[in-house]
Amino acid sequence: MAGDVGFVLFGLTGGFASGKSSVAAHWKERGLPIIDADELAREVLAPGTPGLGEVERAFGRGVMNKAGALDRKQLASLVFADVEARKTLEAITHPLIVAATLQRASDLEASDEPVGCYEASLLVERGLADLFRPLVVVASDERHQIARARARDRMSEAEAKARLSAQLPLKDKLAAADYVIENDRDLDGLSERADDVLDDICKKAGVAPSRYPRRYS
Image 1 (cartoon, helix red, strand yellow):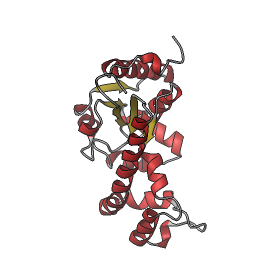
Image 2 (image 1 turned 90 degrees about the vertical axis):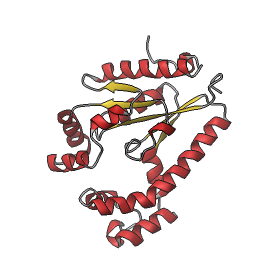
Image 3 (image 1 turned 45 degrees about the vertical axis):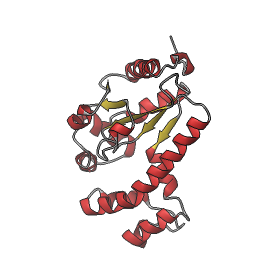
Image 4 (image 1 turned 135 degrees about the vertical axis):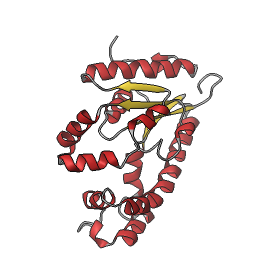
């Protein structure tokens, strides 16, 4: 446990293609447990799950591939072009993801892990910021976000902008943040700032940062 504080599950969020996943991956290399909302979303919609059945009933066979799995690209094209469709999907997946998150957090606490990170794109939008304090927001300007999305996901500029517009404006996420990690330089600079933030979170939780050692001095 984390001294007198107890198990700390803090939040990590940011805009689309902001570099949030790079921060989470870096912390994971340090040994910090990461609960990834996107990973849980894939699990709760895996073939044969009740969640996938609900999605198929809501959106039709067209969002399924020939193997009976979810065609995520097809579903994304529907929900990011239609606000009501996105709300329908979130109403299905959100309770399932919350339940899976609580189970993962319980497992970590039971194993005497002192600190964990919950990585989620829509954490602030969902009104969950206060459940995952301290909240870390990764910030990047829109130009860099679009460039990353196009390079990473092979999106058109219009598709990347649609994803950005579907999320809460960055200023609103920053207003909810306890820590802000600016992603405006190279990866080494991002990693260094991420290290400083994690070390400070550990210290405030009564945990020696060496529990999750840096990769370099």
